[in-house]
Length: 99
Image (cartoon, rainbow, N blue to C red; front, side, top):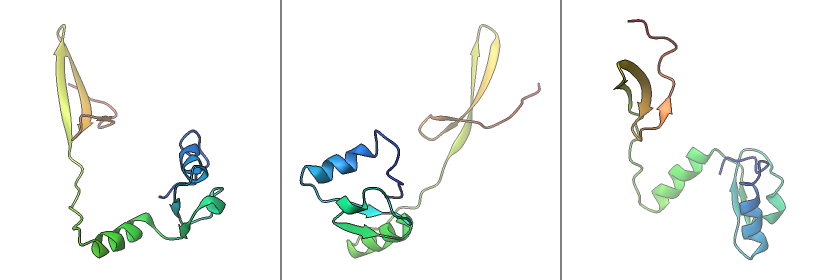
């Protein structure tokens, strides 16, 4: 979904699936190099396809909200400040901090 299927090794997985008898469905706005392997190609936005699919399956899509916070740590008298998301994954929060 939403992949150009040009970057390996990730692009090799759908091809391998199709070559080993699996059904490959491609959802992408543009053509991909693996279109000939696909059982079904949907040229649409992933969000639109998933919204319709979830509706047909009677599943509600929970609202998602990114939660970011600042994490402060002190080690050997030095304070460090890092931006983290709800999973603790780092992201750039500030370019510079002056105290």
